Length: 401
Image (spheres, one colour):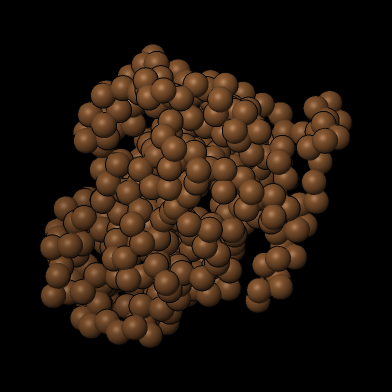
């Protein structure tokens, strides 16, 4: 349900009519607070123009602590950058201008969907243990066109397992990210909306930026405008990932084909880095350079996983020759199939569209063996020849700052 509040009873009723979602209407904030304290199934609150910014922000700030799944929406006669910044910091999900009041219906639908997903997330049993952060998988290739987004979206769907686990898919290809398109999402917010928050990043603020996809699978998509990419600092990416690690079982990160600071921030918190390539000389050359770069960065070899996409292509290169050239084993071989681009064009991961497809089976097997399996520990020790000093990457990054 959605609640509405405006000091003018007629305006409160008009908001409800514009939203097209039934719910009680109130003419003062204190009565609304009393209602929210007794009614726990409200998913959203719409605050009208006559509710002051101060009262609206105080309500949003208190609800982000008491009711993290509750979405607060503001309707205003006019907006400016300062007010939007304060609203985002307070935890307001969306601000709608009265000149565009028909947009309120869509905003309420998005808020209700997100609230339902967050309530389901908090109520669903997961594999995570108290105090244990999510395992992070970063999918990377220094060459475009190898299938990073395909692997990332399908691996995230496989890990979510129809809601048995809570997974967040993060698109860090900030200039040309395709996660939203590949999943046919229409996000209300992107990672760029976190820029005004600076260091004030917490779970409520990040949750307001997420876009649900399917049971157990939530996304944080890249900016819709490529020009926003340079405005997302690596420190902000690190803060966001730290917050997400405390709220999900698994995080899957899609990346651009470049060793930029945002990607390095993802590497810093990654338990597994899936390095994807195809059976062609340029892709394998770039993969070899990637491995050498990771060694120079002192990134632990035991966290590398080489994934060969379209591995059954008949191009005159044998898998054994590839492993010999790379001096590393292939962790997974994903077959080629025309069904994959067909599924992408429909906006449905093939893992969901056809769970028994050979491509789905290969990606699921990779997830089960290299992500869901227990991380290195006393009962699963790291081989001595693979032990490295992970502090190297953080030392390098501190040296650059």
